[in-house]
Length: 152
Image 1 (cartoon, rainbow, N blue to C red):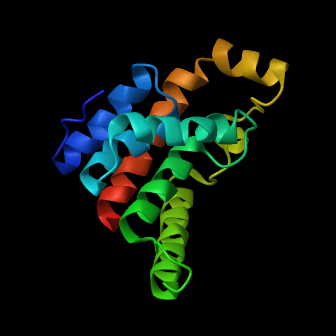
Image 2 (cartoon, helix red, strand yellow; image 1 turned 180 degrees about the horizontal axis):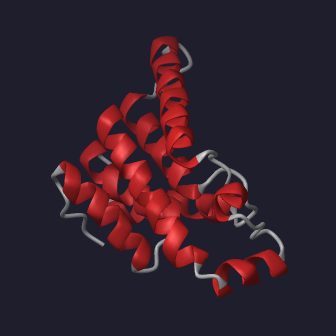
């Protein structure tokens, strides 16, 4: 799972390719951006697994958004309780990312972006039948990557 994307466009395309190749939305974003920030791809994929499908397929915060938040924290976050400046910078960037993502998509909530609640068996079946996981989700991964390129 070596990440060979090193250009801005390359990282965005890498994230989309990883998603269409089977990683979840959060994994795809964090793997694509994590390596350049010192995180090996296997660890990034493991770390982001539970965030997919709006946090464990509960339809909450979009996994691509969660993966982007993790990448922002990896780059700007503090490693100690005393590093309040890094924490505040990260929080500010998360808010900025959220505003930009909402401007593009109207929400950061998976169930709202998909128009159905994948936390329920009926909603997940609906998403699969309508092809939402192969049409809407790749766009969310792409948007998350493009916004990360602006903020990192």
